[in-house]
Image 1 (cartoon, rainbow, N blue to C red):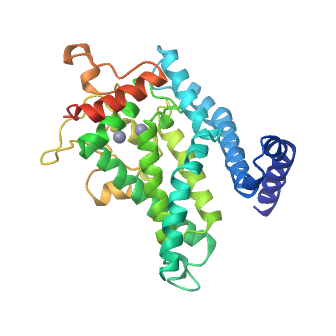
Image 2: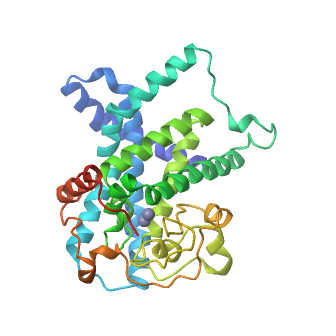
Length: 322
Ligand SMILES: [Zn+2]
Ligand SMILES: [Zn+2]
């Protein structure tokens, strides 16, 4: 493990010195070198994620695909969404938007005497072990993702944006990044807020993000498999998440959002909050009003169209999912 992290640091250093640093000096941006060093780490992690996807998830999809891909253009668009995220373009936007705002707000709170609660200090000798605290942080951030995702299906204005994600009818390992940028921004703002509240150390936060991203890619894969009889209750897999994307989810009595399987990493939150369904099949995915007999609603074919239509639904008060 130590060897791997040394190797990673070495690569980060090399990439920073040969590419990022000269570029920043050239652009007259020497003042942000420290942040750019962190940025280089995220870029490298994004590239590693792409390598794992291509080397492991890709062959798995070819091994046992759920369906034949007939709409390659829509998959190429998901690859673009993934590239925007994994190559750091989205993080660059965050760097100039939510991060300074969060730093300012929490800096002020700190001045006022607020000190974050440190989860890893609650049970000395146990929770301060790296692997224990990592599991705790994974569970906390996963609960945040669960709650945020559930809200995206519950509230019409959030659904207006989240529909971009569900409009993909050819799910592949690239589909998890197909989102409205505004909903990404909102989710990120919530995550930043929580990370300040629980005082997650940067190294652990990076691990949480990396693990979450990989599981998310795999759970969207065009892969006919779950994690087995016991495993399916432990980790969110392609079968569990595909059921969340099913084009016509049968309504759940008493639940206005009529939806289930919101979990991102662990099904535990769905199980505890009674939104888990393990009986799904590998049916078609999408949003029911995309079907011609339901009006054939257009969610956009290109990146700009999808983003624009999302904003229009948001501002126009489009009907939510029923
Ligand atoms: Zn959803
Ligand atoms: Zn999804």
